[in-house]
Amino acid sequence: MQITTPAFRENSVRALNDPQLQKALGNVEKGFVAKRAAAKAALPEFEALRDQARAIKTHTLAHLDLYLEAYEAKVKTAGGHVHWAESAEEARRIILDICRKAKARTVTKGKSMITEEINLNDYLAENGIEPVETDLGEYIIQLRQEHPSHIIAPAIHLNKEQVEEDFRRVHTHLPETRDLSEPVALLSEARAVLRERYFAADVGITGANFLIAETGSSVIVTNEGNGDLTQTLGKVHVVVASIEKVVPTLEDCAGILRLLARSATGQDMSVYTTFSTGPRRAEDPDGPGEYHVVLIDNGRTAMLGSEFEEMLRCIRCGACMNHCPVYHAVGGHAYGSVYPGPMGAVLTPSLNGIRIAGHLPNASTFCGRCESVCPMKIPLPKMMRHWREREFEKHLAPAASRYGLGIWAFFARRPTLYRLASRLGIRLLALLGGEKRRLSRLPLAGGWTDHRDLPAPEGESFVAAFNRSRGA
Image 1 (cartoon, rainbow, N blue to C red):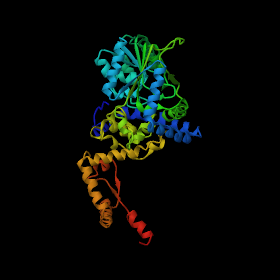
Image 2 (image 1 turned 90 degrees about the horizontal axis):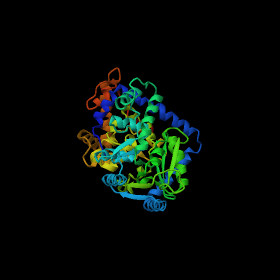
Image 3 (image 1 turned 30 degrees about the vertical axis):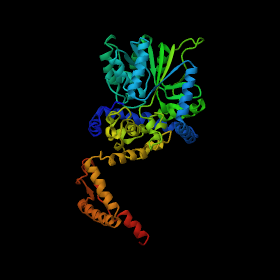
Image 4 (image 1 turned 90 degrees about the vertical axis):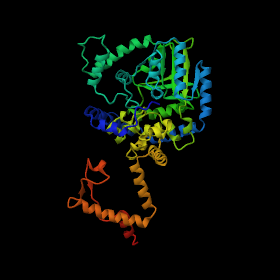
């Protein structure tokens, strides 16, 4: 996976001081949070569906090898081809080989986070094949040479004035006097430009929200229809998916689909939910002549049986980041990785290692909102704590943090000394707070007091009050 930078703190400072970005991030709350809440309230069985979906994915992961073999057999029966890729490098080579055999010069792509993970676009371009993103948000950030800032809304960090500027910069063959002041005009222009690319492309590449072992089908969920055009107009359709996307049956998939759109965008169902099974058959009016599925491991097998296995239940709805106060404050690019937010804080270290991505599990307040809204009930805070523990054990955490925890542990193992130090600390902080009972500056706590006052403690500690109430 491509990691742009581990400098989360520096990225966050820039994000917090970017007025345009801060304005755009307000759309996360308005566009996702309230709509999810309304969709959930309108579905009485929502919580029961979460339990069922968690059970389906947990069962599938426990028997992943069997379901993947069953899926492969069904794809072959339908006339398709399955390719296994252990790493990102192997996946890229397989896809390039398919494109070259098709003599492709241009490929269209549906929205796919796994192709972002393996950095496919740059690889194809370096080898003389032009990739064209067809999802509107992905197309916009491709023009800007950026990575997605959100897994379901890649360009949520931008406003329409920025998009207009990019369209005028790139679409130089269109009249300069055209009116692009309204979002619908931007959409119409992108649609017109992309329609030409669909018909010119030899290969269409999509991701997959689900792979169905029962039928050998791949499933994509979109709101634009670009995925359908991508996979039907080219001579070859390539599905790129990570191995945990498989589910046992059509019925299992249907149950999880009832959660996906509601959790992601607050819709009952996305506008397009497309099932593809093999290449075009003799009686089919259209469709690709070849159908390939590239199944990618890229570190996921190592997660099986570990404390991070539950992360593989993720269905990429984005609900965790939509409700995360840290994501709301700094946006997706600050994380410096393909997967932002709480799910990225767990998945990225799992795939890339804690030495590279150790900054991500620390980008959390541990408020627990991510776990409470996750449709698959993934315990994200617990897994972030596991990564923090590993970071501490490997001495990768900042020295000040390690020494601070070491001092706290020293006292925590000695209750009498801990209570004595607490009483002294309370009295000292109360004294420093003065008549205002607030601390505007405090040694070793500048990260807090530079932006807000710290209330001075009043009265006794909780432990002392508890013991007194018990007569101890």
